[in-house]
Amino acid sequence: MNKILIVDDEVKIREVLREYAEFEGYQADEAQDGMEAVSKCRQNDYDLVLMDIMMPKLDGYSAVKEIKKIKDIPVIMLSARGEEYDKLFGFEIGADDYVVKPFSPKEVMARINAVIKRNSSAKYSSQNQSAIKIEGLEIDMLGRNVYVDGEKADLTPKEYELLFYMVRNKGIALSREKLLSDVWGYDFYGDDRTVDTHVKMLRSNLKEYRKFIVTLRGMGYKFEV
Image (cartoon, rainbow, N blue to C red; front, top):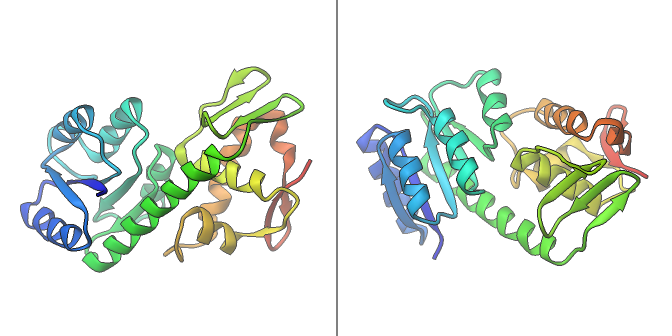
């Protein structure tokens, strides 16, 4: 049974999400602020964390940063703020998804299912592929590591997934819609600038080997050697 942690300072929101999660077959745990969430993640193993942003003691962004130092757990951010900057900042610190309040509990459950399914599939795919080396770029899918000229690249979870997906589909033209669907795991409720932003960050971390990610004007991208 998959176990999730619901983090929100509003009791009613936690209760509703927990009820829906348990109905979907998940084991649900709760935390009322970021500090409690970090503490629980140290003590327990979760398959996903639902993290509110605006909370007392420790906000959601800070809590996610601390959790990512401990364990690589998928995170879905919850926030009343829907500005693009807030979403992109959430992705930059390692969030897998971003849901704006007020939300439909059914939609949240659909996103949870998609993220957990994608995360499980990514682990399975990584375990069935060996590391590859292209010039000074080393990609170890099993160990989930990327090295640029011998130095480990500091990628976010989403950047890892994006790179691994493109490498597994090297030489194939990938539209932004295809990347959103397969890497984000559902029909994304946003626009293709999300893909462009993550590709830009990924290229920056790959340095000179950014050349392998080719832009297809008006369509998307392709990993090409």
